[in-house]
Image 1 (tube, rainbow, N blue to C red):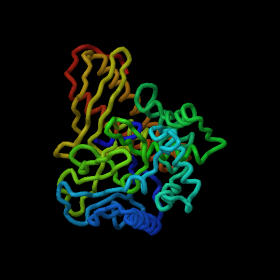
Image 2 (cartoon, rainbow, N blue to C red):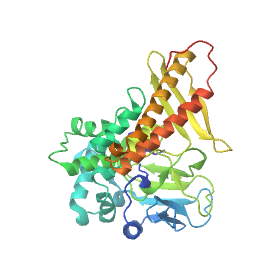
Image 3 (cartoon, rainbow, N blue to C red):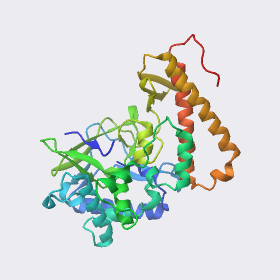
Image 4 (cartoon, rainbow, N blue to C red):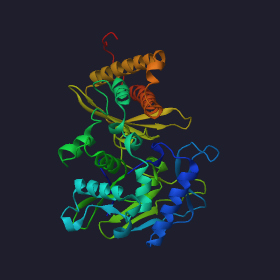
Length: 368
């Protein structure tokens, strides 16, 4: 049974990084705890900074030795290590129930059955959850300036809206509950059983594998609700390689749901008024230059090109505004403004590459 991502699991690197010594202590305790419960973590893996010489660099899981294809990287005892909704309360398949279960364990802290894992999660409260739904008002305003009225992601408040409307949550009276809901969005995975029933789960260590698609994805998850939760090597992993999972497809959705701008390969879907959905992928060529390929190219080439050119022109204007208003941008937390800036540059590069591979249009375009 394949593992499905929740709401379209976490990139450990997207969160504010704790000092390396504290991060190492926390993850060492997590590994020891999982093994004490009968779990398995291949010892040829280590959690470290991407740049070992820079303790502030992002963290990921790396192979310390060659790991052959088909090797078991991770095995979690389902009931002893994974947080999900309570079956005895009748909400095992309820995402709201899973969020409430996580909130309960976070409130218990060191007293929780899942204490080593919960303590790591408690370090990700508030804006450090990383997803735009947890950003400051200034960060959201910057992102809206980049996306405008037409480019995704446009529904960045969907997660807290879900928590309030579907789960009856109240962020003002229960901030811990809201934080638990957003942490679940950013880190949880969906697991099904033989009948296709689906549950949202919090899986320790699994959520520390960073995300990357394409040739970089070198893991294969395998889970059965209430029975097992495993991760295998999809192909040979060489010593020093980072071990990647995939959280799904869609660069705007990755930013919205997980709080980071993914590396190549990237995919985009734009809703073009009066035309429909236009989608394309972006990867790096042999020379490192961006190369686009259309997945769904609308029949109306003229209006598609017109949309892309207008948005590209607008984005370049935002880029100029950014450089002229660094003091205003500086009022936004660096983590948020950095992600918005990175996303803007990715959008510009993607649209430039996508227009280059559309058929030429001989007619006239509106004056920009």
